[in-house]
Image 1 (spheres, rainbow, N blue to C red):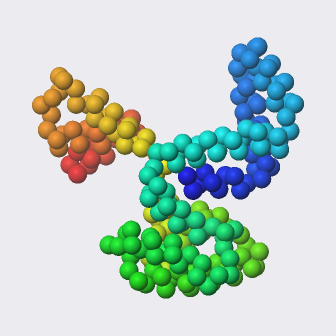
Image 2 (cartoon, helix red, strand yellow):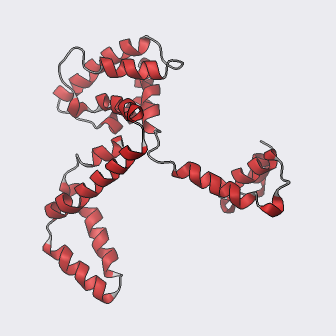
Image 3 (cartoon, one colour):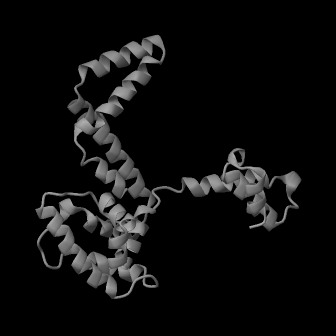
Length: 222
């Protein structure tokens, strides 16, 4: 959801390539439908398409995601908004409450040092912003994870950034895994052991077509 929010910060120019691709795809559709889409798209400028189609679409996705999560979960995810440089201000306490919430929620992973790291990192971000270098929260988190020097200086903040980057926005992956299990563990194969089912699922989910025999053996013997 936080990543979807970032999409609204882009200008309409960023979506020109997407819109052009959609137009090309529409030309491949049936004749009547194709002509209607072509006329409709031709009448809309890029800005109009962005405002009337893309933004409402993103808003609907965000609303649907919000409906799937409990409010407490959303409040936790919103704490990571402090990494968005556009939201930053010169308040000396900016982000402290959010960092404290993250620390309390992941108490086994973070200690008091995350607050000291944040105070230093906040100064770094403000300096970057004053220099005219704005980054989205995703870009800031990616930098914390990928930049070896920053990762060494801010180990706990880097871990928090990793948590943000891997936060799922749906349960689709888990649901696919259950579907895989149901395909493997049928009524005619109900005597498979748990270990064997696990091995077969690993092969299935890791795309068996792309695995050679040696890799399959490694998975089975894992």
